[in-house]
Length: 386
Image 1 (spheres, rainbow, N blue to C red):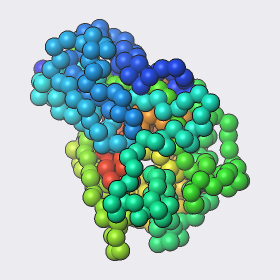
Image 2 (image 1 turned 135 degrees about the vertical axis):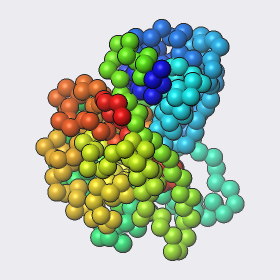
Image 3 (image 1 turned 120 degrees about the vertical axis):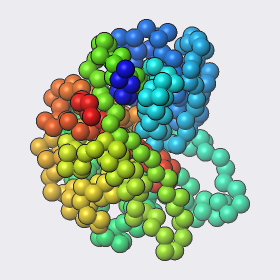
Image 4 (image 1 turned 30 degrees about the vertical axis):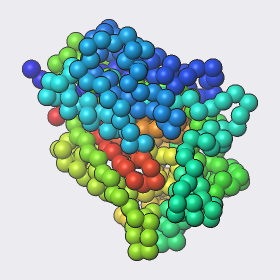
């Protein structure tokens, strides 16, 4: 029996400013949609891996919400934005060794509240700083955005990266989003629009920062043999890897200059038996434009420090030679942590991208990034078996 892992189902709920529903409700719907997409009865799912946003509302109780019985695998996974890739890795290993036959991996969140600004969605999600952490908060370093701003500023200071170069990423991804009917923001933007958008935390403008979304996404991982009799074309999981650098934010560290993509990328490609030149589509975690730039460098699409020139060369957009974040990413499409790049990767590998379908989809690279460059996951997907 061929137990090589494949993604056979994808479920995406209504996304964005969708009010009156809880994260567990979104999660349950996403799993049901993924099972239906695969052509599976819900009861045929015998594994469930859950990940939620900072609200942590989706957990083991989702099994009861779905009415699933006698699961062979059930766990919560938390590595922040790298969790989606990690879930697929664990599900793939479980399927490969026979621990489970059909594993649902799901993320859902509902931070947006009606009549409340998006910027306040995560304002109370974290714990109050204690001890030495209070010094950072007192200095204005009080959120992920301010931490990433420090990382981006260090890259700028070291390599000469500019705000305009970051803006080129936002413009390219919005051009992709214009072709995606699921995207929250589809109106094209220019570099001038990017530069004119208000400051959030320097060097980040509003258009450097990801969306906030309510919704849920799930995938079903099963074996190649079983997928052959299901509804959708299988997406083969050829390679995977994680990296957790353990950055120390001190003088002489590489914080802001190197991400976990530098470790997990080569490892996943080696496992898949492909090289970077084989990659036609790259779905990169983009909580900020800066994370796209540093991921491109660390995966090796360009040399370290040359990311700014690379992204302004025209390579990223729909007319470019490398299809990056073809759905618009988290900057323009929707923010579902690592499920945003994963969901678009599945769509591209299936050849179901419509107006945004990439010409070269034999090898799709997917990244997840968690914490502040603290965690990284990489998947290598393909419509073809190894």
